[in-house]
Amino acid sequence: MTVRSRYRRVGTWLCVLAALAMAATVLASCGGSGGGAQSTGTATKLPPGVDEQEATTESTTPTTTETSTPESSGTGTAGTSQTSTEQTTSTTPKSAADLVGGRFTAVSATRPDSNKSVLSSGGREVKGDYLEVEFAIMNASTDHLVDLSEYSFRLTSPGIDADAYEDYYGTTTTYGGYVDDDEISATLLSYEDLQAVTYKLKELESIDKVFVFFDLNPMSTGKNAGVTKDNTSLVIRKTSGTDYGEEVTIPLAGYPDS
Image (cartoon, rainbow, N blue to C red; front, side, top):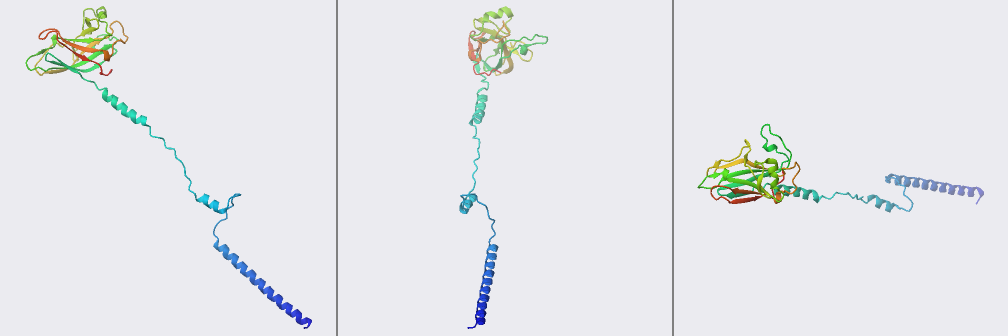
């Protein structure tokens, strides 16, 4: 083999190797391009020690947020319930008592701090401690009249000092007069004209808007702490006529202090 032939063969192999190298380069370029086309994700930089699977798990785990909801207050409901029961139980009792044909119902019992309820034109208002009891009265009999002038309206309580009334009122007993140590009497009055109610009621006749007004502390404008609704009672007594001396009692316990 001549030197020229040898060089020719070497040149041929070099051409083959160059062609193979170019083919490999083209194939590598095509494969890289295809891989790039298929990948659409965005690379995320992960913190040290966290692999891609852990990051994916954490990112897809739902986040739970605790919401603090105030508990419903039982006090409000109970208070509401409690406020409703008290209103029901504080309703005026309207106690009634029958005495010799007359039916006397205590409609209300209030404790004003002045004598304004009994002031006539030009009268003087006096502060103090008073008890005002309104009545409704009916002749419940079917065989006789009820003469209201024959009845006495009284108040008894351990806090009453009956001896003190004459010092202030003298012999006038309209708002309180001596009966016993802790018992006084007053006049039944009409709201319409503030005059004494002394007329007769026919059978089954009824009247209302009549009242008695007691001065509970004739010597002072202060409150008589010894007199309370719970220790005070009305006494209605027949003082003349048929069944003289009979009496009935109406306790004032349960009447609201309004």
